Length: 388
Ligand SMILES: NC(=O)c1ccc[n+]([C@@H]2O[C@H](COP(=O)([O-])OP(=O)(O)OC[C@H]3O[C@@H](n4cnc5c(N)ncnc54)[C@H](O)[C@@H]3O)[C@@H](O)[C@H]2O)c1
Ligand SMILES: O=C(O)[C@H]1O[C@H](OP(=O)(O)OP(=O)(O)OC[C@H]2O[C@@H](n3ccc(=O)[nH]c3=O)[C@H](O)[C@@H]2O)[C@H](O)[C@@H](O)[C@@H]1O
Image 1 (cartoon, rainbow, N blue to C red):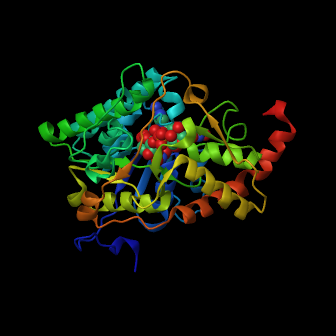
Image 2: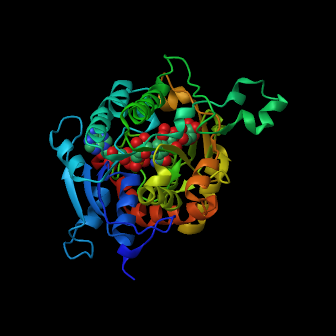
């Protein structure tokens, strides 16, 4: 059976479409491109300033999907070709953003411009040309939980009403302006409100995705190997870097914050359902996460240490973690989300989707990838520190 005879959740045939994917060269974009090319007949207009993470999909020209992906090296801040690409496509997916916490308090202007101002033309072109938009927001939009404002031993802290994050119920609780950490969440919130308003007033067909800590291969960079030596990526890459270098994992403010981590491949399944079921996805805001994979950052560090030792065959350090203050690690203006458990009711009802992979299993495959990809390069970087 050819892939063009695939049907959607309501039994209707899925027609091949052209997708303009902005930010296609990033972590999520690379996995989405891979999935679309290998399992569908859709065509991708891939827009990004970088393409290292999708090079394997673009070259060589003998690849089976040759002709179904075109790379456009475009900075969406200033390029008149963007509107033409959106017009050519049936659907636009916007992934472009600055989305590493180390930037939110140190480069707040770039963060706000990237997450709000630069996304404005994308929304405008979709709205004016009656094109569907899937926009990537964030779970950071919820900010802190209501329960975090209660005393530590207050019984209501155990009540799910005080910490489960629901798309259509939970408030967005950010810290004061001087805590510039929230520049990202606030910019993402405003672009969500703008998209929602375009839907309400001008009929824009949109879906908003709120990812909850999607992790897996190709996330961010390893400092001094495929990114700047002084760069601070998200926690998966920070801890991977520490493990590869045989140094202790740094726990910011004791690593007490809690997160739910989801395997990128599970999350991509949810995005595929959104792409191919517009009638069920349009007008919706979806949490996409794995509520069963909750850990404190300290527990994540311990689990990653154990898994890495298993996949690399190298013994772990006697003291595998070290505490560091957030001011020392991120600088002035950092603040944190205390706990992030997604409510899954809406995505479950609309798309029948559920995550599958346990935290242990996703760390095992991800750290196997990290070890295979980087162990040798890290060894060389350590041997020649001045050339990194
Ligand atoms: N990974 C997660 O768990 C997660 C969680 C919450 C939200 N998100 C959101 O999902 C989206 C994608 O995240 P990711 O993890 O793949 O990040 P990423 O940094 O790997 O990918 C973003 C891509 O956008 C590109 N980009 C940025 N500005 C651009 C511009 N002006 N013009 C062209 N390209 C530009 C970057 O080069 C990069 O390749 C972001 O909007 C992010 O806020 C991700
Ligand atoms: O991934 C998401 O869902 C969203 O959350 C992330 O924010 P956060 O989870 O705080 O970012 P991480 O860098 O992954 O940090 C997670 C936790 O680990 C801690 N951390 C990070 C790095 C480190 O070396 N040590 C450490 O203890 C941080 O302080 C934080 O508490 C980013 O803002 C975005 O990528 C995204 O919008």
